[in-house]
Amino acid sequence: MPAKAQPEAQLDALASLHARAFTDERPWTAQEFDALLQNPHSFVCATQHAFALGRAIAGEAELLTIATDPDYIRQGLGRAMLAAFETEARKRAAVTAFLEVSSENDAAIGLYTGTGYRVTATRHAYYSLRNGTRADALIMAKPLA
Image (cartoon, rainbow, N blue to C red; front, side):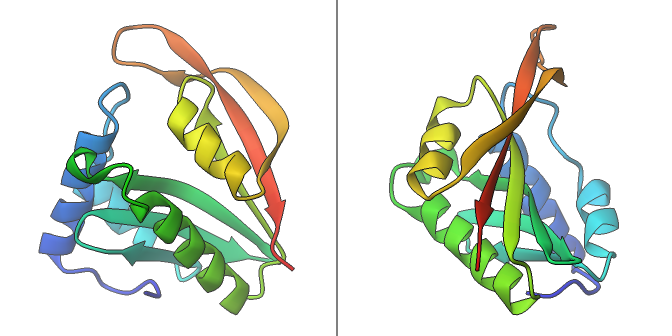
């Protein structure tokens, strides 16, 4: 759905799902989701158990975050949300999509490489993990045209 005023319940649901899906990283708050979705270039694709948040501008789309309820993993929801993100990005004239993913997130890396994304760069020690360590961010991209 395009960016617009989001009901508080939806923002809380996004934040709750994000916290459940990302147990190693600091979860995003409802206020952070609200701030991102106030940008007219931002959009969220969501079901009850998964979502993808992205933005598209100047021919590029960025996947900001994607999450699946841990009780529903391995059911194709992440792949469906990624496809929905790419579809909405194309509608917004994006010809390239990119994202950042923790080098320690093997499941997500597998999803992204399996759908055509390729590593283009690495940001060393980018993510702060809850255990006090840091993880690299892999920057991945895919042509949408």
